[in-house]
Amino acid sequence: MAIANTIVLITGSQLIMRLSGANSGVGYAASKVITHASNNYHVIMAGRSRQRLDKALSDLTATSPQGQLSTLELDVDSEDSIKRAAQQVSTDFGRVDVLINNAATGNVDDDVRTRFEVQLKTNVLGPRLVAAHFRPLLLKSKNPYSIYVTSGAGSLGMAAQMRDIPTPPNPDGYCVAKAALNMVMMQEHVESVKQNLGIKVFAVCPGFVKSNLRGPEGVDGWAGVEAGDPEVSGQTLLRVMTGERDEDVGKAVHKGGVYPW
Image 1 (tube, rainbow, N blue to C red):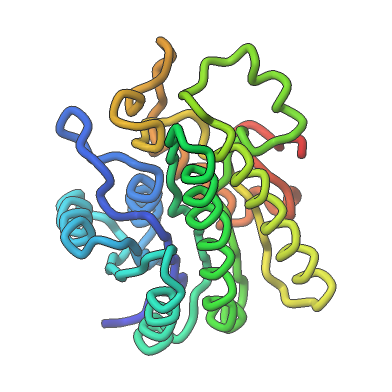
Image 2: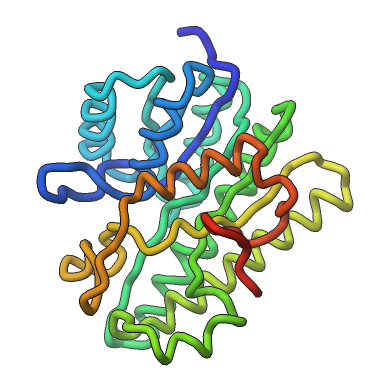
C-alpha cells in the first residue's frame, strides 16, 4: 500500500450509532469529509471496538472516498493500548501528520465521584497520553497538527450563560473535563512554541451536532433544540488541518470564530 502524503489519525472515529439509517458521530463524519476531500489523505480510524471499526470502514468505503482508510484498535482509557497503537502506526506509516484527539465520553452519572472520575480519565488523561505517545510520530511530519476536540461547555467565559441554555442532567463533570482539556491543549501549544517543535496545536469545538454523548434520548437534540449535521464539524476540522485557521493556533476555535477561555 502506497503511503499518502498526509496521514490523519482520528480517535473515536468508529461507528458510534445508527440514526435513521445513517451513520453519525463527529469522528466518523470527519473521516468521511477528509477522505472525500482529496486522494492526498489517509485517515486512520481509531477506536476500542474491532467490530464497530470494521463496520465503519465498510460503510465509509461504500461511499467511494478519494482518500485511503484504515482502522486501528486504540482505547484511550488504557495506556498499554495507546502504546501498542503508536507502535503499530510507526511500523505501518512511520509518521502522523494530523492527530485528532476526538474520543470522549458524556457520562452524567448521578454519583459525583463516578462521573468526575470517568470524565477526567477519558476526556483529559486519555487524550494527553495519546498526544504523548504519538508525539514522536508527529515530529516526523513536515507540517504536524495536534487537534483536541473540545466543547463550548469548557469555556469559563461562557459558563455563566449556561444558566439560560437547556443542558442534559449533571453536566458539571463534562464541563470541567473540557475546560481541563483546553489547558492540556494550551500547554502543548506553549511547549511547541518554546521548543520550536513546529506542531500547530488547536482545540476545536464541533458544535451542537448529532452525537450519543448526551445519551440515547439526546442524540438528535436536547430540550426541543435540534442537533446539526456532524459533517459540518468534519468540515471545520478539515479547515483547521489544511491551514485555513492557522491565525488562531493555540486557541479554542469553532466554525464561526474563537471561544473565550
